[in-house]
Structures are given as C-alpha cells and as structure tokens.
Length: 382
Ligand code: SDX
Image 1 (tube, helix red, strand yellow):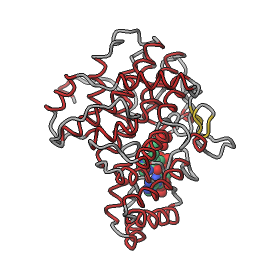
Image 2 (cartoon, protein in one colour; image 1 turned 135 degrees about the horizontal axis):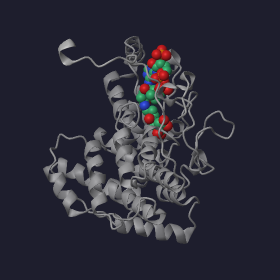
Image 3 (cartoon, protein in one colour; image 1 turned 180 degrees about the vertical axis):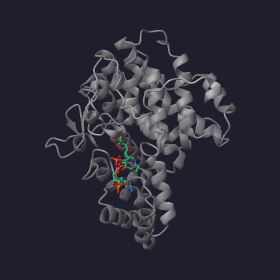
C-alpha cells in the first residue's frame, strides 16, 4: 500500500490535479487565468451561441451544425414536461423549504421516471439521453415548485420558446423581453461549466464508484448549495441590500472585513486577478438596469467593488453581477442558486460522462493526526 507522505497534503486539495479533462480549461491561453469550453474562449462564445448550443458542445464535444441543433433542441423541448408525481410532491413539501433542497429531491424523483432508469451506469448513449432530459426537466421543476410555493397556478412549458425564454415564461407566466431573454441565456452560458469546481468534483467522485449519473448530479446539487460555492449569488444580493446606499459601501466593507467576514461574490480559488465571467455580466447588468429604469443597485455595487478590491485585493466573481441580473429579471433571490444548477447541469453531466468513459475510482488518502496506538481498557477501568 502506498504511504502518502505528509508533504503531499494540500488543504482543500488546493492546486492538486485530480482529473484530466477535455471539457474546460480555466488556465486561459497564456496561463494567467481565463475560461475556455472545449477550446472556445468564453468571450467568443458569450453573446454568440445559445445555452442550447453550449450544452451540445459540452455533451458532444463540438458546436452543433444547424441540423444537429434543430434535433437537439427538439429533444429538449419534447422532454420538458415533468411527472405528475413530482408536482404532487411539490404540493406536499412545506413552502418554507429552500428551492435548492427541493431541487436535490426533484432530481432523485426524476431518476425514477427516466425511461433509461435501468440502463448500465456506463452506458454512454443512455447517459447523454439522461443528461438531455435533466437539462430540460430541471428548468420545468424549479419553475413549477416556485409557482406552487407562491400559491400560483402552474404554467406549462411552451414548445415555441427557447430554453431561456421558456424558463422565465414558466416562472412569470409572461414571455420575457428580448433583452431579458438574451441576458438570461448569456448567464446560463457563463454558468454552464467551470472545470473541477467543488460540485463538479463531487459528481465525478460519486460516479467514480460506478454509481449512476443521477446520483452524481444529486451530489453536485448538494455541494453547489453551500455559500462558498453556488450559494454565493443569493448571499451576494444580501450584501447589496445590507449596504443599502453608495455612501455606506466603504465603511460597511471595512467593518465586515474587520470582523473577518467573507464578502460574498468576491474572491476565487483559481482566478486571483479577476473572473472573466463577472466582467462580461457587468455590462449586461447596466443594460438591464436601464431597461427596468432603476440604476440604484449598480450605484451601490460599484463602490463595494472598489472597497473590496482596494482593501482586500479581491476581484468580483461570477456570482457578484449575476445576483443583480436576476433581480432585474424579477426573480426571487431563492431562485438564484437553483438557476446556477439549471445551467451547470450540462457541465456536471459532461464531466460525469467523461469520468465514466475513462474511470478510475477516486480514493485519496488522509494524514492521520489522532491519538497514537493504545490498548483497549475494560469498561470499569475507563
Ligand atoms: C463559485 O471553484 C469554482 O470554479 C467555483 C465557481 C464555479 O463556476 O464553479 O467559480 C463558482 O463558487 C465562485 C465563488 C463563490 N463564492 C463566494 O463568492 C464566497 C466568498 N468567497 C470566498 O469564500 C473565497 O474567495 C473562495 C471560497 C471563493 C475561495 O477562497 P480560497 O481560495 O479558499 O481562499 P481562502 O479562503 O484561503 O482565503 C485567502 C484569504 C483569506 O484571508 P487571510 O485569512 O489569509 O487573511 O483571502 C480572504 C480569506 O479570509 N478571502 C476573503 C474572501 N475570499 C477570500 N475575505 C473576504 N471576503 C472574501 N470573499
């Protein structure tokens, strides 16, 4: 048995290469950090390809041609309806339960009704079909639960709307403006994939035991929920609300940092000089603020960014602007992290399929720091 030496230990696996992947590269072309999906720079994809095209790229390895996109899109639209049993469950789950917890249960329930439920976990073609169904149905599930928890009638998916427009339509019972649809689609593209982040790693560890893709996605959802990861976009909005005005920003940040508080939406384990996704989303925040006629949150966000950057040298990450973007779309803050999951499921599934196609059980070691060897004493001598 290999005896891992103490100096192999990296807290939080920081900097450890735990997998090889052909899906995303966050080193950037010059190694200074940057995001590419299967060789395409995020700056070249964002605003030029839809979430559907991005999901196809991650699952199939290439951007689709027109025929492939038409067929893929038709499969997604056809798969959107969710089982009646899941809707009934939503009516029974207490309204106070967070949508991320409900989404975790929802994917488990969707697995039971998947036509490929009994396919072998390593069946590549079945895994792609399951991934497509999850992409389509998770969006319907999040919207349906939101409507039911608000006491509103369900809004059925519309086959004539694309993925982004259909989600906003199912939540609001109103077809979004083109600006809102395009901004939401862009946010999904930016959230789709990010190499071996905690939730993707959790999914890969899960299926490395030859467990199934649904179990991998449930692991990922549970991992994404945490405020150090996907839960940060919901927390980022609360920072904006607590600061409340541009004048408060400097002092509020100073006090928070003095209390060793983490400012949600800032910092990143890998990006130390800036998250390219945050830069892209910021321009869309300004445009939507103009469309809704309220630039208050942009005026509060700017001095917060300046204060965190100057006092802690921490740039904003993707969750910082996405919180404002979803606010402008009239989405409740509890939906922010579920939306992250709706986008990321394509990336998670691509990694799960890649892991299962070339699998090796993930089983790292731990450095033991507990009590030294000792004899067991009879209970009356303890
Ligand atoms: C996502 O990994 C991915 O790719 C994730 C993601 C994806 O697409 O999948 O990009 C999505 O999760 C983005 C990150 C969202 N999380 C947040 O916004 C939460 C707030 N940020 C942090 O908690 C933090 O920045 C992390 C967790 C994101 C990264 O932290 P690290 O790399 O573990 O850094 P660290 O905790 O070792 O901190 C280093 C120093 C510490 O200061 P000192 O104790 O050395 O004085 O930086 C400080 C930290 O206190 N620090 C912060 C901070 N982030 C780091 N201080 C205040 N506010 C922060 N946000």
